Amino acid sequence: MSETLVQGETIAAIATAIVPEQGSVGIVRVSGKDALAIARTIFHAPGQQSWESHRILYGYVRHPQTGQIVDEALLLIMQTPRSYTREDVVEFHCHGGIMPVQQVLQLCLESGARLATAGEFTLRAFLNGRLDLTQAESIAELVGARSPAASQLALAGLQGKLAAPIRQLRATALDILAEIEARIDFEEDLPPLDEDAVKQQIQQLLKEVNHILSTADRGELLRSGLKVAIVGRPNVGKSSLLNAWSRSDRAIVTELPGTTRDVVESQLVVKGIPVQVLDTAGIRETADVVEKIGVARSRAAAEAADLVLLTIDAQAGWTEGDREIYQQVQHRPVILLINKIDLVAANHQFPLPNTIYQAVRTAAAHNQGIDALEDAILDAVHQNHLQASNLDIAINQRQAAALTRAKISLEQVQATIANNLPLDFWTIDLRGAIQALGEITGEDVTESVLDRIFSRFCIGK
Image (cartoon, rainbow, N blue to C red; front, side, top):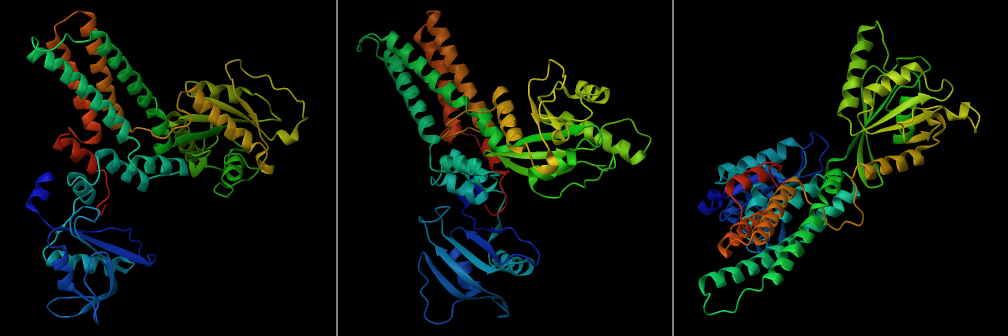
């Protein structure tokens, strides 16, 4: 990818999602040394409009040879270095829909641009020094955020709140390395190395690395969300629970057992955490071929879920069928939902297995118990060590892997010091920690890593 930037090719792509007959505005973005020339070739701005940076021109996109008008549009000009990529950038703001933007893009390509690869605009912003690697990743996370909390974490990363402490850690490690190497190269000219001070610095680095690493699970939870499966016997109120929880009629609710034949999905946000809720078919032995398939899918959904909501009927109590289902899912985190609680006495007691720690009483048909259910889910998340409080930052999986390598290297430095090995040995793992920290922000990163990161971006970003 980096060779493309060196060669100075001009790239173009559609920068907005295009939905047939539904989009109001579509944007074609062009970046590179020929961006302005391409704009002048295909865009006609009537009157005396000034082609200056950070101005919006009104006019028409037209074929340069035939003069045929393709679209009425606005042209936004952003010249280097005050642009997203720090190159000359122009954007054609066209009418939405497939045809206008596709035709405008095609004219840009015919006029000398190349179709951008996935994430190439942001890659150029990184390579040109406008963004570091954590900020670039934060852009992708902001685009894909599924909850307000995930959006805020992405914005914090975009503002450099993750890069700042990582850079400080790396700078400290570099300072330690410089002190050690100076003693190796100029041993006779400098006072002895203060080994106790170095030990304290390494220990402090490890403490800060561990603190940042502790945010990984919470970050992954906010980015990817929690998959929750509602399971239980037929007609215990699973579909009613989904409808009450999602405030919709996603699932069909009847008095007939076995109504749900397939997995019904709903996307919710619970206290800032995106939750994918799966309403499954009632699990029971059946001769119905279609229902058998639904039961098999229910078991598969429960197996893949992060959390299982085992739902039982308050009137029936804990039955043999409930026990059999529980045996199938008890290896997953389980919350027991005692539904239809409105049909039994308020002080009714339910004999339950001792291994069930969380039980929530609900009356889904009357929207009762939903708040208690969400509180129980947050408790379950906390018990499984997936939640950290008061986070300003949260690292992703790539960053966590690099930070883990830095941690291992720093621990190896400690072991080297404890074993009284020569100073040369101290520097080996210290360099490894510095390299791993630099990989997080992009100060020390390979092209293969860049390819892997930016290939996950959408084309046009």
